[in-house]
Length: 430
Image (cartoon, rainbow, N blue to C red; front, side, top):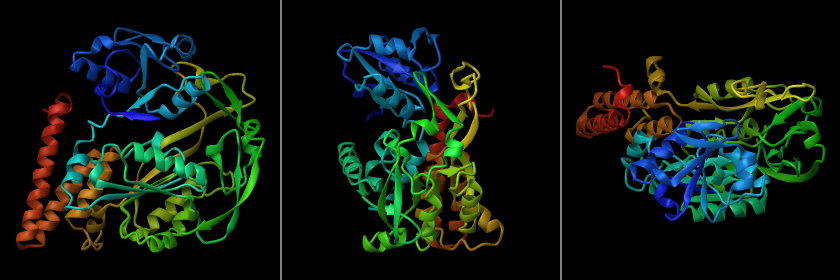
C-alpha cells in the first residue's frame, strides 16, 4: 500500500475521495484547503458513518465500490483503521488507493532525531514484518536517522517487504527468521484464509468457535474461518544469536506481532534487552494457551521497563449472538470482549533516579532517542519531562560538555514547545 504524507503527492488533475469521516480525514481536508485545493475533495467514504461531513457527502462502502473510478478519482485512506479498510477495499475489487499519514504532529520526534550525533540512528526491530509497509509508524523519523531490521519467517513475504521498503526509501532489512527463546524446530500453524494469523502455538478452537468478527461487508465466526490449517516445521533462532551473527551494535526499540511468540522471542534476547529503550508487543488477554498480558507485564517490568499505554485493542463478538453490535452506529466502539492488545513499555530514568537507581548510563543521545520514541507513541508530556530531567542531569555532572549538552536539550525543548504552541495554541492553558 502506497503511503502519502501530503496532498501534493497525489495526481493534480483528478478529484479526491477521503475514506475516513473522522479526525484524520478532517485534517487531510484542511491540508487540501491550505493549498487552495479544497474543491478537489468531492466526498468522504466511511465504514459506519453516512450523511454529510464538513459539508461534503459521506458514502457507505457498498456505494463506493459501485461508483469508484480510479481514472477520475483518487481514493485516500485517512484513518487509524487503515489495515481493515484496505482489506475491505481489496475484497471489493479496489486496489487503486493510498494511505495518508499525518507526520506533522510529531514535532519533538523530528527535532530530537535531527539533533542526534552525526551518523547516529534510531534502530528498531520489527518482529513479524508481514504488514510492515502497511503500518510504517517510522514515517515521522527523518530517513537518515532511521534503521529497521525486520523478521518474517515466510521467505517470499520477507522478499516482498524488502522490495516495498526499498521503494519507500526506508533503510529496512528483513530477515527470513523465526524468533524463539532457543534454537529448535517447531511447527508453524498456518491458516490460508488468514495468513497473518500464523502461529507457533496451536489454535484454541473451543474459543475461536465462539468468537465473531464483523466488518462492513462481512462477518464470520473465527473457528469456521480458520478451520483449514496446515503445519510446517520451522527452525527458530534467538535474538541474541542473530545480533551476534550480524554484528548489530545497537537496538533502541522492539515492536512485535508474532501471534503469541513475543514473550519467548524476548527471552531469547536477554543479552540485548538492557540497551533497549522500549517495547511494543502483541499480547493475549484471554487464556488461549499463549502467554497472557500478565506474563508479559511481569517479564517487562523485571527488565526495567515501565508500562505506558495500550494500542490496537482487538474485540470480538459472539457467534451465537443474534446481534452484531460492531455494525451498530454509536454502539460499536469497543464492542465485545478484548482478546488482544499491544502494551507499550518504555524506560523511565526519571523514576529510576527518584528510587535511587543508577542513571550513569544516560547521556544526551539516549535521552534524545527515548524522547523521540515517547512522542512517536503519543507520550508527548513524558517526552518533554525527559528533556527537562536530562538537562538537569547532564548539567549536574559538571564540565563544559555537560553544560553544553544541557543547554542543547533545553533549547530543543523550547523550540518544540514554540512549534506546539503555534500548531495547537487553543489547547494551551492561559
